[in-house]
Length: 593
Ligand SMILES: [Zn+2]
Image (cartoon, rainbow, N blue to C red):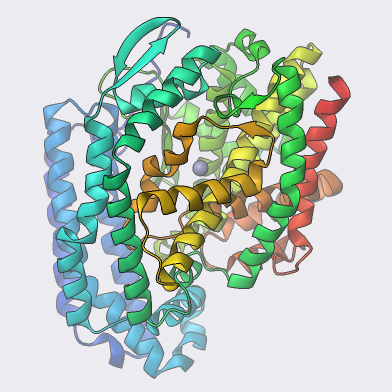
């Protein structure tokens, strides 16, 4: 198993890239989009509940057909980005997809107009399957502009605010970084240099950090011009769309409320004290006088001994899910049996890891680059959690209800990581193995819950600054970042001066019209911790509740999702229960130091 290639089998989708079935499916999908436009353009607002129901089924039929092609082309391309046939199909499908979304853009606008003029339709029994989707449409409608205005925004953004976003990613992808790797000078791409930030060798980490942020900081004026324009644009657009704040759009997209997020962030701020306590433990474990910023996510020396081949990783993850419940583990077992996973690292393959939903197959496909580290085993458990979510949701929901907000989409994945953590802690042979494990888990949660919270504050500070009429020059932006960062890290970490430019590299800050990507991750982490606590209290009685949560897909709100397990995310004390799980891991670590 160690030497054989773990590659996925896409023949369930299409026999090959050049098989005529690909063209045939594209033509059929296009025909469905055309007939949908013909049947419904200009007519949605006057549809009866029964006809509206039929329109939902029709759009789902189109999306189901088209999703096989978009999935196949993107997976083929991700597996080998250098393969000309995969490149060409991917490009063709991307363009077609953009054209079809323009062609069908009328649909959401007209649906908005419908729920605005006839809100009672939301409660029609015929439409009960789509009730929550219609409620979400109703929340958006107040902020929609006319079709012409919406089209103008899309056209102007393409070469306006989107270009700033493109500039940032072009910069990152075209620069080279000189890094001393284990004492040897290497000139590396951003992706390669970035991969060294958690290298086991401390000097290598320092060199990678200083090289990346030093070079980024030199062009701070370019990045501040980009970020300033994007944020100012957003403030203007938010006002034009009558959002109460620059965050409101994302609250609607994430199907949540401002007060819930405020409570969440306040709890994390209170918990930062515990995070700093952990960072001080880590300083001791690493035998350092003070923790440098380059040590925050460094692996403990002990973790180098933890190596796994793919078969071992597969067995561990299956065991972890099986211990929770054999039926719950079905998706995980099926992914391996059907070879829906591509795990071997190779040239031309997409970096990172993802899980792509395969609705028609009621399954999913997973890509990762498995190198045998503990982190890789956790990534596998995480992505298989997404596959589990897809497994349950696709069996119980129609396609329009597969649109799951980010606040909920990470539920099964983080839960899967916790199942693996418990499985590994139970079989750990020594305290040093336990330490390596707990630190990995705490590092991960520390980044997701705490460091990401600093990014929310940073983004809020940028908008507040604009509202106060401040000019966001490079130094001002740096000082907003340092203030937000220090609210989390306090005196627990010593930072290189180059780190004032840390904000420059986060692509999310530059995503035009997609603001506050950040807090849903904090939400998910803390919510799943609270969920796991429930599982520990209730044992087997909890299993069907989790299945119910995953089966619900996006058909109910995150608030109702919490209600399934008796958790009230709207209560100010709720988030404390998540924080307690984090603190318990710290307590476990303290016991073995
Ligand atoms: Zn995930």
